[in-house]
Length: 143
Image (cartoon, rainbow, N blue to C red; front, side):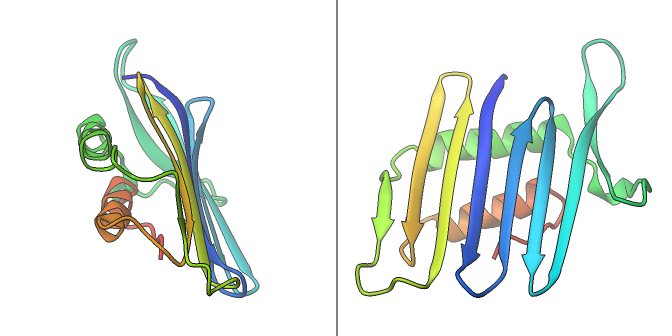
């Protein structure tokens, strides 16, 4: 499985915002709540030449073993989005709201591409997608 691009962002104009990006072999999680910003790198730790696990490395450089993203968990997430999110529309808009929660995702894995966004409107399985993101990242918040 080759991750060519993974970017997801969600947040309100005046509220909290969260994002998860995959660049150069690592995931970067950002959370902005009020005046507090949190950034976590999920770096690959190589087991051997062919396998690796992702371990979250925090600003203090401490490793929390509860935040390991196994290949199985990652594969299950990508199987889910390629199966259940492929029918998402390109855009979900609520024309009556201009300062609500907006979101966007641009995911490209192997030959599967998902590019979608919205403002106060969501695909039917969006809540499930957020739950899967939380499981993938061992409980990170995305809402």
